[in-house]
Image 1 (spheres, rainbow over the protein chains, first blue to last red):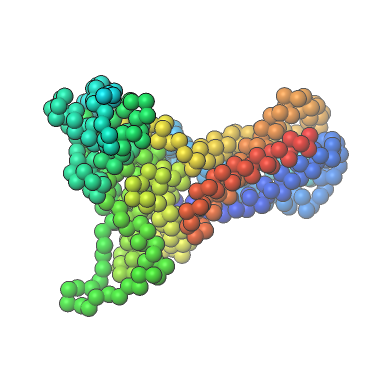
Image 2: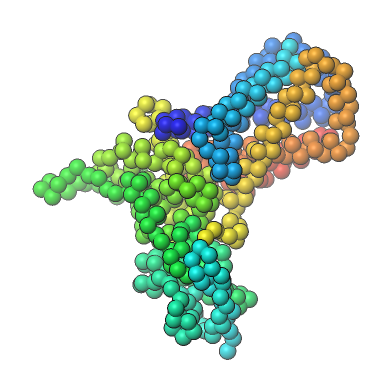
Length: 112
Length: 237
Length: 114
């Protein structure tokens, strides 16, 4: 990859990390609240279904995840498995797409 | 008189530890121990040293698994149980016994553009630098590096990524980038970007932990990351 | 020759290791997490069965573990952002300890909420 490309990957990783810090904080707080309130699955779904605000939030969350996770794995693959180059990046791109697809299905299932 | 049991690496990449018994003395340094072995027990032992007083960095070796200057390491601080294990610096090819091939270390220094590049000639007046300026203070905090290789030897990313320039080279590049007299900024940023450059640093901080001059290459590398990112976003890379 | 375990025995290295291992674990967990939630789309019965399975104590413990991993990864990540973007100060070394503490607090909150 070009020098500029590598540098922009680093920027994307840090930017998505900052966004995820906010999203994860909200997500954890929500989970702790839900568990503490003893909400069952049916109750949670009744609150989330058709909720545009939550749908919007989790879409942004998903976008940040799809950027952050593959770039994070990239270093692990090259440093610990010795996997470098085009095939590694292609595999990570495929993983990103798969993650995005599964994530969208989850969002639609819970908030649609 | 008590005795130290010292295991010393013999051979090159392939080899084995050889055990010696060395008399323990007050205020003894690890370099004293190695010197004793070579002079009194086995003249075929190969090792490096020069100043013996913590100025040149030539005597750096791996002592009980950790990279150190052997002339500045008291036996009392590392061999509590009377045992020492001495090996050559890690992450470098071994020439023989405790001597490593430092060429790659200095090649990477050059690849990181670790050489000053100014614009004045001897005919010009001196350039004036304010010693207390923010940039100069950053440079001063990192400029005392003597190229001993301890940080390079302690870095796991160097071990995991053969092309990684390493903490010393990147630290030097940082001091030059922040040098107001330097004129090679664009070239330097390109030299330290990429898979082999500053972005490969994962902030293990083993370099900062082990540096005998108490330099923190991690700080400089963080600065490089910011500078390279800025240049990339502006299309200057 | 390779560096030894003793050379790595300091807080910043453990912070890195926790950050990387938790990241890998979360990366492996996420596809499964998304897939299960996606069951709500077409297969409500299967989702219900799965959610009943999660009532088991061992699964609850696993959920707590995941929260711990997420909190640890978040705390470690914030530490990195501080080290890379804020002006350098030597006390930043102790951010590793702060991050560990924060992660534990969050996971405790989750555990106690149970």
